[in-house]
Length: 289
Image 1 (cartoon, helix red, strand yellow):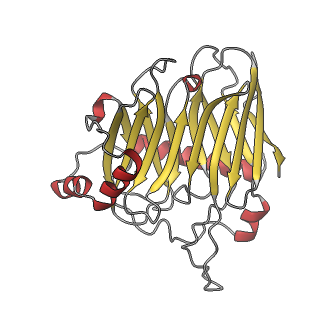
Image 2 (cartoon, helix red, strand yellow):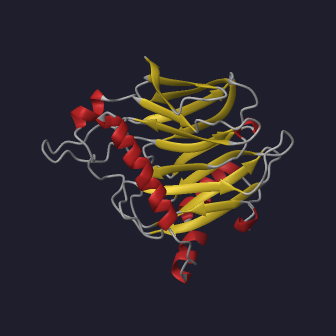
Image 3 (spheres, helix red, strand yellow):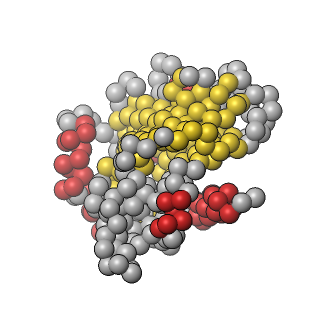
């Protein structure tokens, strides 16, 4: 097992552990007021949804796990799960991740299809200061649901890179695409996509040169199975260094799982994985341009 794979697996275990340890708690009155009175959210809501009603009854659809206080503001685990079975007639088509006080509040828009099986996503984000963080689920039928939390974290977007810059650039675009070796057909199966990328925000200062590294990050992810889309994401530098996504797909027959990542320099990285009766558990990137 090489160093890159070991690093990826370590990140996976750290993320999973953080999510298990994060215990939901009731927001304080001050935090509730910050969530409800956010002027930033008011502008974003109008921009994205206009006058459409958003159901605040979060327990009805969204399970949103975020630590109340981040151990590391540059690597904050978040988990969004939806409590509904996807059907062609009714499914969650998008999940919006909004971090109100980040420099770029619309941090990610995740898209799903009935072939996703479940509209769930886990990833890691940067958080710049104490802030409300929101998950909004949009159904294909037009309904909107929101879950909101308050997180105590600071400096995540402006923190220096956690690894050597030259080493990070040397490994850029390497990907791992993983599924369970025993794929269950006609059921949702968990996928892990791990991308080696510095995801620099443009806000962190190099401690040696005292210069700011230019923004350079993954901006889109598209995953298909058998040529049909199952998951996609439009993201920005709020996603942590070495982006990591966990989501589902619903295979009905053997086929190819394909992930394509595009960054802000228009570099494209592709990973493919053959899914059959006894699938390989991991596949590296097979193409980069």
